[in-house]
Image 1: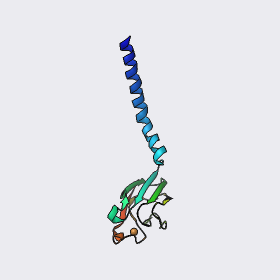
Image 2: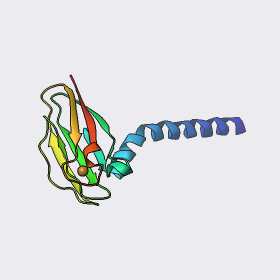
Image 3: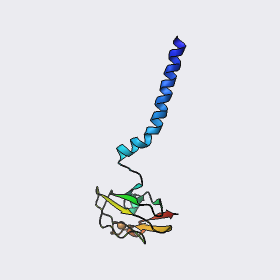
Image 4: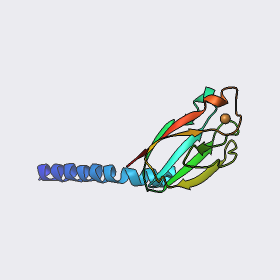
Length: 130
Ligand SMILES: [Cu+2]
C-alpha cells in the first residue's frame, strides 16, 4: 500500500516537472512582455555596453517587432538599408518599431544621436537569413 502511494507521488511530481518545462516559454512571454517575432534591444552608451544584444538574426520576409529600450542617455536608432531613423529614444522610454526585411544579408544597426564620445562606435549587426 505504501509503495503504491510513493509511486503515485513520483508520477505526480514527474507530471508537474513536465508541465513546468512546457509552460516556461509561456511564463516568460507573460511576465517579460516578449512575444513571438519580437526582439528587445537595450540601448546603452558604448562605454556601458552599447546595443544589447549587439547582434540579431531575423528571417527574410518575416515581420519583426523591435522593442527599443532607452537605458542611460538619449539614443537614436536605424538599420542602414533596412530601417530609417526612428528618432530619439530617451532613458526609460520604450519605442516599438516593425520592419520586414526583403533581402538577406548583413546590415548595420547604429545609433543616430550623439550620445557619448564613443557614439561613433555604437553599431551592431543585423543578420537577415533566407
Ligand atoms: Cu549615439
